[in-house]
Image 1 (tube, one colour):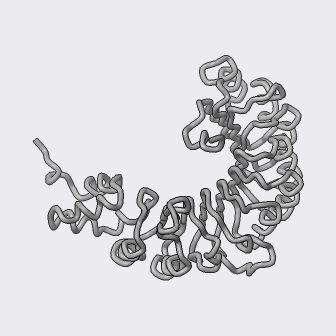
Image 2: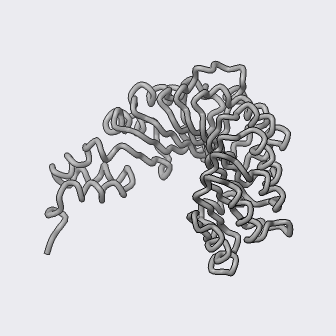
Image 3: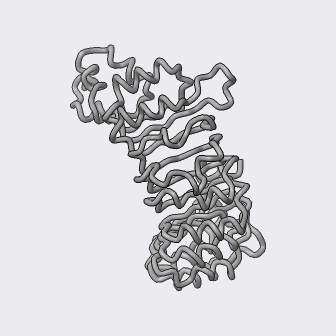
Length: 326
């Protein structure tokens, strides 16, 4: 009977990759072979620290001993609701990430108080920045700020960031490489602000608007006016009508359209009306409908039969999608 000792290094590394960081470090004490594997660069490319309330001393040790130049993506929690004695993310730590982790491309920050962290301290190598339930300084995303900050940033996710509002949307133009924008629960963004912001961000190729107070029709109107090169649209169906969906007919580059429930209104277009609009989108290849209750129903058959050139995905709302309404 085979044991763990009989497995090749490559298989053990795959197994170790599923372990939380704390357990990875613990198993390095089992034997010399496992210590060598835990020290392998491949194992530290993607690190998730959101499971822990971590003392600064431990974080600095991980940074110096294990992550450094190996790190490609990092998820961290800031413990915003853990009390005043909990460790907070500091400008010094952000600068150290930039200096010691030259290959860091993706940074996801959860429940963090960043109000005292200047955006200039973030690693300049970032291509993706995700902010989930974070407090940020009002100056972070103002248009007048230094346009050379985060010169490689291609994607920004703003999920339940209370400070984000209309003027910040226009300020995103300072990130000249930006091509993907995700807005989740940004309740201070208005329809007027979205229209003005997308006019400035006409080069976006992916836009997601989820769980906001904006209606789907107003969002699609702004997209049709300003984002002619858009390739992927993902939005909740609140306030979606057949006439609103028809606004993006003829979009020359649109390849993927995702509509998320469960907030269905009487004006919600039927499956046949969705087919009609999608047939007028010349490059559409993926249509995804989540949480509309259509899976296994006649509507799903109509969509699949009417759009043979598309991958049609009809399914219940995924857990991460449900978060937008919690």
